[in-house]
Image (cartoon, rainbow, N blue to C red; front, side):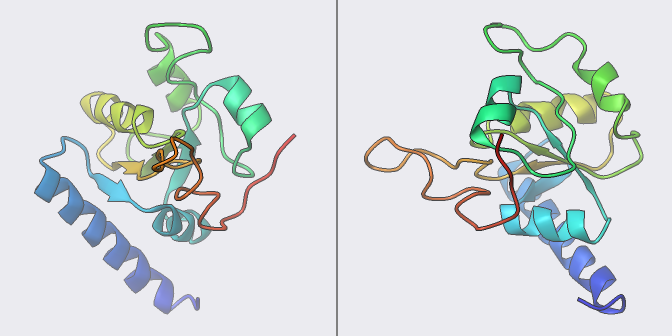
Length: 154
């Protein structure tokens, strides 16, 4: 994508994400598909923040060069009380942030909380890293990895 094409592509993605938010009545800026998230990230238009647990991040796989800010630490039943402080170490409230989890549920909650805390451009990445469950109750039919986007594993 050329420099001239990037802003129009970014604007179109953000417009579609905002439309999804309006249709669903979301409290945050919007929702993006994994491919849209990658395009925004690659264009330098937004920062992806992984909100899964450390074991998921390290063992299941991760997107290169994206920070981990656990929404809920492994084994905990409550959200991470330091989530906003840790998020602020990686993303400023005036920067667009794209939250990623396993299937799009924890990232939805992270986008809501970030918005309440003053992040004006908080987005949920639909389908997450592994995707939702299929008819056989298995993940992997959609999501970041199924889309063939860059990822790595320990």
